[in-house]
Image 1 (cartoon, helix red, strand yellow):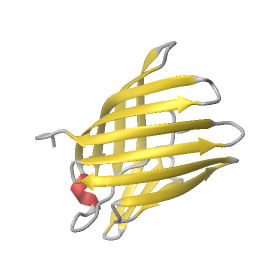
Image 2: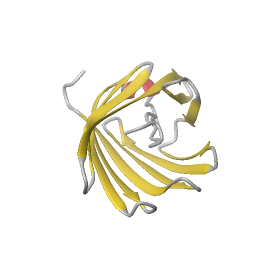
Image 3: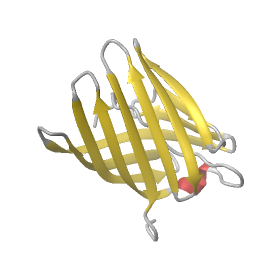
Length: 149
């Protein structure tokens, strides 16, 4: 996956803090590219550390399968987490609410996201992307891998 496939991470609600999400996660993503008439899947893992999240796995379409990797930088504080692209530019800010909506402008493309934090062990991320270059929707489920550090 490329940095054009925007996806963020981490947050908490109630007594949870951003650091509670540090660990290894199973990731399953489904993307529907309305412009290219393509369905794309991703299965892999995400390693969340205090200052970064790295996803690795396999991306598969009807035409091909390939290894995929991406990195986001994190800046956690008591009020939430700033998610930045690997180059350091801002992506989104996530707070402490269990249900959050975020917007990100990438040139003329608009990323409209929703994060649903169910527990310390599961969250869902949804993106609807529209603009002159892109038009897709993606749904990602993160589940903590028990016993993994």
